[in-house]
Image (tube, rainbow, N blue to C red; front, side, top):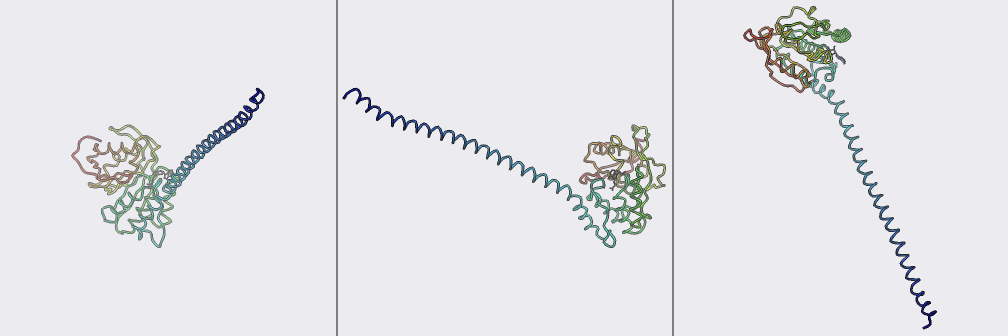
Length: 289
Ligand SMILES: C[S@@+](CC[C@H](N)C(=O)[O-])C[C@H]1O[C@@H](n2cnc3c(N)ncnc32)[C@H](O)[C@@H]1O
């Protein structure tokens, strides 16, 4: 074979082989890119799915929380309404509870005391829906019984009075204008609390409900209630302090439980969701004011 023929024979083999190899190279290269592209697409798809799942979960949780927040109070008040159906005369509704007003579960316990006859004279720190519920329950039970509410805000005092008047309950309830003034006492620092100058002569309080002043008026804003009103509590009176899930009020529970004022002490008898119930006991004169 001549040199020329050998070269032609070699070219006949080499050309298709290199073309085939080039084709394989192209195919491998393209499929490599394709694989990378598929992998990248899958990764973004997966990330998208995870993001969507998180987003849906957040939306679902948000909706659930919103529904719980908006439904809790009305449903609890509806529950209270069922228990005390006959309190609302002629199908009239009683004011909403929860939020700024007392929680319905604490109200049920206090209304039970009214119904059972254990409670006739009620003194409240902070007026509002609770005043109307108390007055309604007292009127429904009949006999003696009244509620006196200390109120520091002239606007809220007027609103509660109007609500009572509209329901014909003004004979059962009195809203006393009691601006916040500096308290004085040997065993406590001075802090703003209700001025008792206009409080009528009420000596035998069966139920003291402490739901004011608002927490933003001073630290431990409700502390003075026990020292200032202890001498008006009958032996065995019930004292309910609202919002004891808050730090300030929890501290007030702790102080009230270990102090004695005007020969009376307080013993925690029950916890009610976010309120604490005490029983007042006459003690030997000792520590305290
Ligand atoms: C916790 S509220 C008393 C609520 C009342 N004991 C009841 O259960 O309906 C304490 C004080 O906050 C004020 N207050 C009542 N409702 C309020 C509101 N929606 N916003 C701001 N202050 C309010 C009034 O001065 C009230 O005496």
